[in-house]
Amino acid sequence: MHFSSERPGSNLVVIGDDELDGLIITGLAGEALLDAVRAQRGDPRHGYYPLFAAASGPPADGIHGPELELLLDGIVNDEEQAAAAATEHWRQVGGQHALPASTPEARLLSYLALRPSRSLAPLRDWRSATVYRYPLLAALGADENGESLSVLAARGLLVRRQLVERLRLCPGCGGAHLLFVDTCPNCGRIDIAADESIHCFRCGHVESQGRFMSDGSLQCPNCRTRLRHIGTDYDRPLEHYLCRRCGDRFTEPDVVARCCICSHECHPEMLTTREAGTYQLTEYGRMSALDGSASDAFQRFDADRYLNPERFAHLLDWQIGITRAHSDCRFALILIQLSLPLAAEAAKGRVEARSMLRDLAERLPEFLGEADVCTRTRETDFWILLPQGDSRGANALLDRLQRELRTGETRRHSDMAVSARVLRSAELRDVDNEARAVMDHLLRTAEGTANA
Ligand SMILES: [Zn+2]
Ligand SMILES: [Zn+2]
Ligand SMILES: [Zn+2]
Image (cartoon, rainbow, N blue to C red; front, side, top):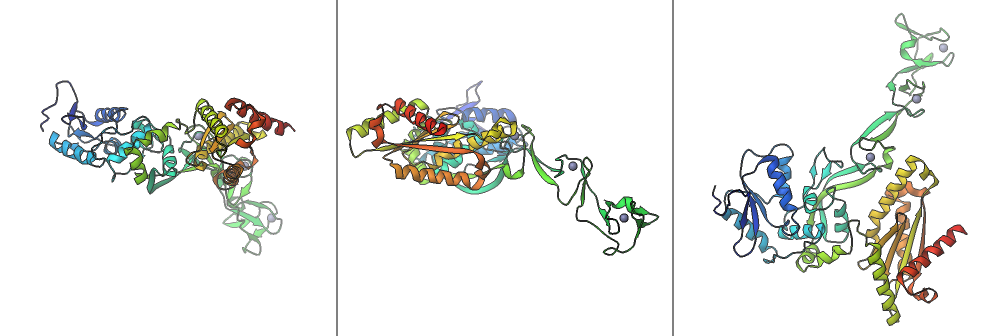
């Protein structure tokens, strides 16, 4: 193995003559190599660049091997091999080295643009709270559980190729470490056992089969009748389980999902679902990376995919100015407020309310058009600005949202009250023409309706 440009004391070999084409990590193995690779992928400027490791030491064991494979562009024996592979990557983007890198999502698109045939794959790791994690997302600075991927797919930048697993997650903490425990449907405790019982026709007594055994034959412990023929003297009830705490007999135990991370307990139907899969860049995603618009696409959203309220107000002010100057321009502003059910006072209700809010917050961007923006001024207050939107567009959006909240996964939130107010730019003459005042006005109207 020969790395001519290796400098003493450094584990990095640079590939490229005039400009940086990629890096080789040398002299490291196992966990130390993995740490170095993660750090290099985490570099905000060059994290998406071709990255290789020099064969060194024994191959990584356990989970380290597969994770290295997901993060590296290969193991190389010399600089020529790495340079050839790097050139091939850069050829995919026409040699353009300055790709968007301002956000984790932009870096992801740039990473995939260099590797069009490669898909972003999750890794199954029992140490991870969600069991499946995307090491590359974590390295690039995004949430490693892959929550952002469905949003990127909804925006047409990525496409999901292969479904790897359907996860059931705790509605309290989002974790996937769940125990499914059989419990007594009567008292809810777990001290239950399989227990065949006998039902005496003579006196109606029901008890465990063992209590009927007497000298090798069956005798009712209550009325002392000898039971000879099943169907005539006795039968076996279908309730094959007995609760040792409350004595209840039942056919099927209740199943409770218990979270090992936050101890939240719920019915399995209440668990949220997420699909782990592999993702690839679409042609639109590739173009967004190449023309630099990927950065803009993601500047619009912070980590939560929402504008911060200041930027939202700024855009609203801008829209107000445009409609004032051009009579054919308009917009619609929507305020969606959730009032939490009274049960929210109980701990269980609070957890459910939080999961419901998170559901809505996560899914709201899916309902928005390309030019629409949203923000959140309180935990329960969501705002949407629809440039060139009218009441029809606003109502259509609200209908879709309402339908979604009523059906599907979010059905369990039916006791939550959702209210929405729409303000059209045509109504503006009634209020001060300034974003903050307009928003306050809408909040006051909403309050007025709620108290009426
Ligand atoms: Zn019981
Ligand atoms: Zn009897
Ligand atoms: Zn949990």
